[in-house]
Image (cartoon, rainbow, N blue to C red; front, side, top):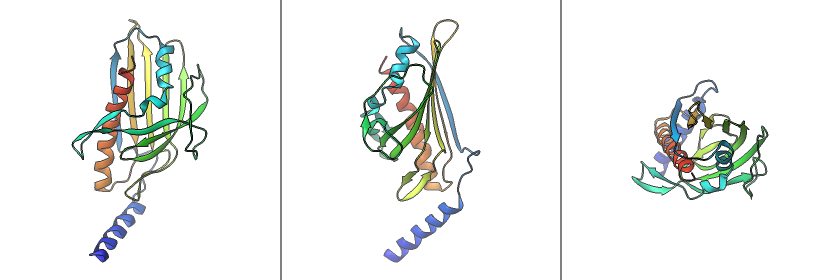
Length: 200
């Protein structure tokens, strides 16, 4: 039985090495737009985007386990991409500088992102780009630079705040990994929507 299991794992690992997704070939792209029901201004929304630590404890619905679970067991800024030590949240007004954050994901394990912000009087953008591979069950599911999460809030001509969440990912085209990752990214988009709206 152990021999069969080892053979199966070797076969899956071989497939993983043969299906490296090209950077310009995303196989998951999704965008969600919604109006924020709030009187907050762009600067106040920007402070929410900078409060990475408040992602800790947020709930999501796990389709594989068919129940609500904690999505991030830890979240926060870190000094560099290799660090595991969290830094305090900080608001970097109008900055274009890049930072790093660590999200201790319930099913995707530790996810390290490069974080950048762009802010004007009428718009705030937050971009997260994966800088360390996501490993699932011992396999590399997503390689660095192959997962981008973008959050944007802009003031419309009517004065309303239009929010957009977009996720773009390129991952291994192996059936069990692909199903797991597709469901995971869908759930994380819903969780990010909840993260923004519950702080208004």
